[in-house]
Image (tube, rainbow, N blue to C red):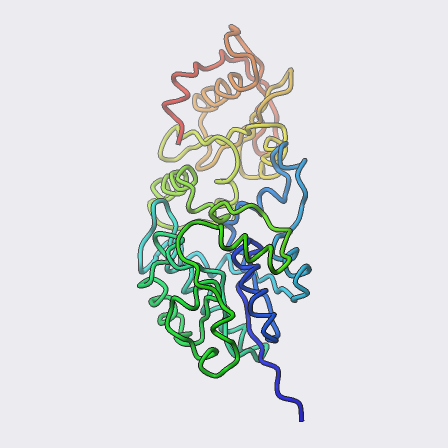
Length: 348
């Protein structure tokens, strides 16, 4: 009787590290199943949607699926955006330099991957994490915490740094040859690129520190502003999506304006006009804007229209025409474009 083939689940983002980790495990005869989690905060999702003009010119591909295809590894995409809200709003181990709950995020994902591991009959989980590469989540203590709290202690392998870490059960059991695994540490990617060349891994995105919007300080400010305005740490899927789009201007605790930065974003904002007030230039092309929060009063509407007039290219003109659409009704306002110095005081 042929020996049972060992199965493993790999956390596959499609970046260089996770791709190499999968290649190293697969070349030892292990059957690899890739898994990728959609949290709602991946910047690449936004880019693939082609919302901004520049993004529409770039190839539209899901890097995890591309890597899976190149490695001949099946990849399961799992939407965890609703479950993930507790991680973002109440992280046990706190945030990093922005609003990134990296340690809690890893624990959450590995717990969810453990469920998938059991579903496919796999024996262990591996990841592309590198010892010392990220300051919050990839130092030795953090790696140990994640393995322990996820319930995967001994069964969570980091192939790229394995020889710098204590042997895991897959190594002890002979499912993986420790000597064929890596000893990489630190932030340099030179060793990874050497391994990629040796293994024939050529198609991968340039390493850029991940794709999570929560590590972006500009995005973090918008999220903090949202929580402050709501008086609680919560968000809807739609609110989180709109935080990725446009310029955000806070007029009052109950009212915000989102202004499209280009034609693509302006068209995108128009999709979310229901229940909000939409403003756009009436007589020429220009930025479309959307209110967020409570309904605006008449004086506030005119103030918002003056901001839209500024971004429509009519700055400096004595008066500009701005269309205002609310509750299915449209009207045109004549307003003086706002001044940039004042607008800058509203930026989030």
